[in-house]
Image 1 (cartoon, helix red, strand yellow):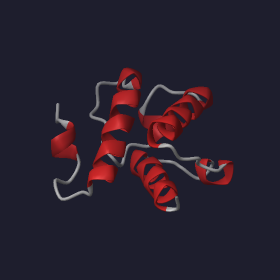
Image 2 (spheres, helix red, strand yellow):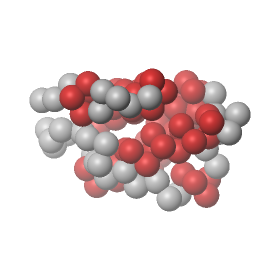
Image 3 (cartoon, helix red, strand yellow):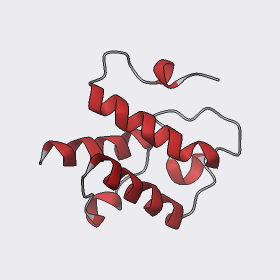
Image 4 (cartoon, one colour):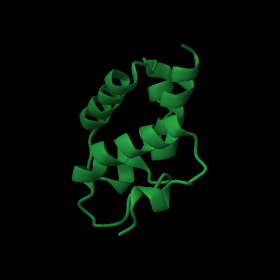
Length: 94
């Protein structure tokens, strides 16, 4: 299995890397299929999560990175990299 360092580009900005690492950590328990979690993993299909779990993950990320992800943005998130980008873009607006 690949490490976070192998899955995320080494040249990635520090915040993006921290967000991606946190997402991978939060979603790791829901990887029942044994397939590697990657930035392109479709959250609702590649993992054993339901909508409540996804909202819990989003709230954890909001607390951890001191951001608020609007519901209309959260509704459009499909993949892990889209979730990371939502956190990073909301952080940049502060």
